[in-house]
Length: 107
Image 1: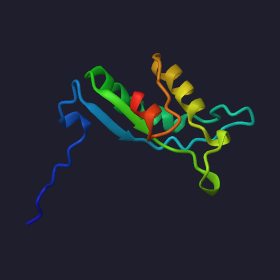
Image 2 (image 1 turned 90 degrees about the horizontal axis):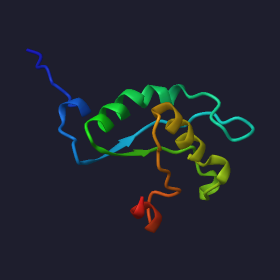
Image 3 (image 1 turned 180 degrees about the vertical axis):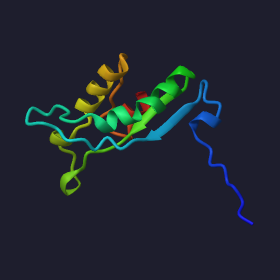
């Protein structure tokens, strides 16, 4: 007999006041000015982000565009993604240039 397994989602968990880490796929194309050329992936994440924010979670989004040869490159910064996401959400999205270290801890 097959057993139904219920996989929990963010809607099944109490998130108020909790820090919630969300791995998002924001590997989006940038135009020649370094701006988001297609925000489809950002728009796809909006319902989850809004749900968490509305329930007073401290949302931390994690993504990447790449690190050529293992070194950071301004060309692949997620800053333009954070700016576009701010416009889509109608609220400021903070940006941390790195995921470890003092700046990331302050963020």
